[in-house]
Amino acid sequence: MNDEITIAVSKGRILEEALPLLERVDVRPLENPGTSRKLIFQTNHPGMKLIIIRAVDVPTYVLNGCADLGIAGKDVLMEYESDNLYEPLDLKIASCRLMSAGRKDTAGTGGRLRVATKYVTTTRNYFAEKGQQVEIIKLYGSMELAPALGLSDQIVDLVNTGNTLRANGLIPFENIAEISSRLIVNKAAMKMKQDIIKPFIKKLSEVIDR
Ligand code: PRT
Ligand code: MG
Image (cartoon, rainbow, N blue to C red):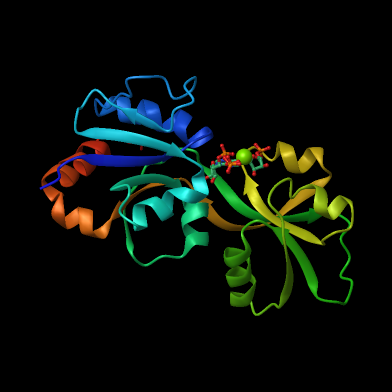
């Protein structure tokens, strides 16, 4: 049996908070992912490696079994909408909120509300649940710009301190979801490699900040 474990970690701010957490369960990459250009990192455990990839790609690698475990934001997981991933742990890192926001002076235009976001599926589900039909405008970043230039009436984006909204003349409207990073597990790996994965999940659960 192949008892090697691969963990896919979102790069960027999730990685920054995930590394100290992994360190607390005695998992350390042999090179610093912050400075290396590598994508695969061996760790102090010969049977365990990390791959460090874009946040949106983490569920894809885990679902396909190329990684056994993954660390990804709930925002990415909600948008990915897969029933085929286990999500056993809230790691309580990289926390923020998914919110709708817009200009203070947004007056109802009478027409359909235009919402700019990179979270198309989550946004559609959210407004549909409220019984509101909206026009969704897909963007890949800097959503905060859209209302200022009249591309949309509102945005749906992540908010932490609220500074980015304020700096762009926007105010938060509604809280759509509390976001933090989650541990995800490939279903087949959970069965086949349970002797390694189950104790790993237990150890990790004991070092999460409450
Ligand atoms: O672009 P790339 O694909 O490489 O990745 P990315 O830009 O999505 O990565 P990165 O490093 O930004 O990390 C994204 C993940 O971090 C998200 O999927 C969330 O799970 C988590 N996270 C936590 C955040 C924030 N907090 C956050 N505040 N991701 C983004 N933001 C941005 C937000 O989009 C907005 O532009 O920060 C700005 C708001 O912050 P405040 O403090 O001004 O409110
Ligand atoms: Mg970013």
